[in-house]
Image 1 (cartoon, rainbow, N blue to C red):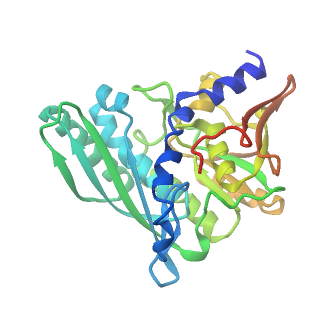
Image 2 (image 1 turned 180 degrees about the horizontal axis):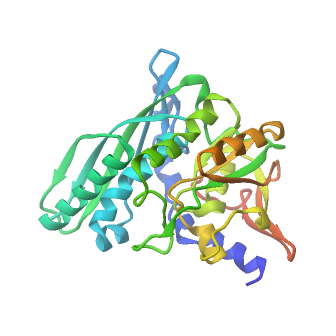
Image 3 (image 1 turned 45 degrees about the horizontal axis):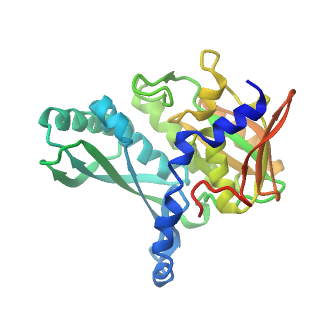
Length: 323
């Protein structure tokens, strides 16, 4: 596959394209967003940032699980609902506090298996599920979870603050395996001791408190390049990425790796002088990290290797979330 084909595949990947309706939804709230003075940051980030009048802030997020995963594996649905929500808080330099859920099902067996998955996720991450709501009479199964966390106000890692000249750093827990229920998931937690899992997901809090990064996100369903695109879109910048510098497992196709949800994976930007210390902290926790590119003012996301260069997103014309 040549680099132009790879760029087109990343641009048209379902994990990216299914984000497009977000812009229309957010626009409905434009007339009321300014009425809530306690909100520091909202749409477009991994979690909203709520001012509570102290030197700490509340982080507030929610995620629902993709329907095809719900139908394929109820246990994994419950387990991964914990993973993705904990990541939304940790990616912003926060500490998760508690979760609630909304469950819909007409199938008691699936409901119980989903709840067992949630229970096992709680055991792994140490973040409690404290309540929720149940629809016992729907013709389908679905699960959505919301989470709150806490962070120091001046240490929050946001998505919209990347600047031209920053380097782009990617970080993955490489000790993982492709998920049994999706070729686009990378399981790094279910088979590890809870102590290791908890230490690794709190790495961003340490990086945030040391103020080593200018922006960041956890790598989610749009994959590595798609998540970088989301970060650049809200920061109103561009980026150029050297594909040869992206860490990758030996046994996974490279395009698949770029599209995968890595469970423990982050994109951050940093000033050049802070990059080495940032990478050192990631790697001290067993997370492989590397500088893979640079932020610029082009509003283009391009990828390159020894064979050439191609544009994945042109934000003068393209959108991912449109925020």
